[in-house]
Image (cartoon, rainbow, N blue to C red):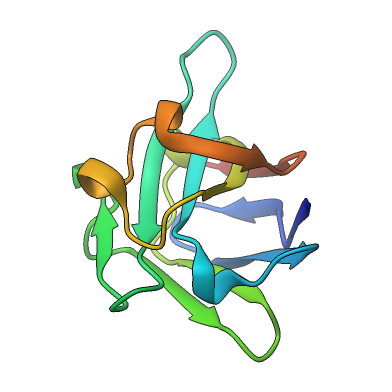
Length: 126
């Protein structure tokens, strides 16, 4: 099982990025997928989750209305579209997969995830 994130980079405040999470070794349609981020000196924070069972999505309050999670099962890829980026969004972003096909408890707690990618850096300049 492998998850690979891509799409990170440097962007000015107010800009957009789209992160991708590609999986190998399993199919996304059997697993809920979450996005997390970790800034230097801070704990890992749940950003968003998408349930493969019914497509339900969840977001942490600070990104609601700005970020959107989606999946393309044909490509076995989950995306995180990030708009109106702020300097406080700067972090390493990780995708992760649950064993289950729904976001347990909203899917924003890292403890419910079994598989993790290596992360991609997002830097938002002011």
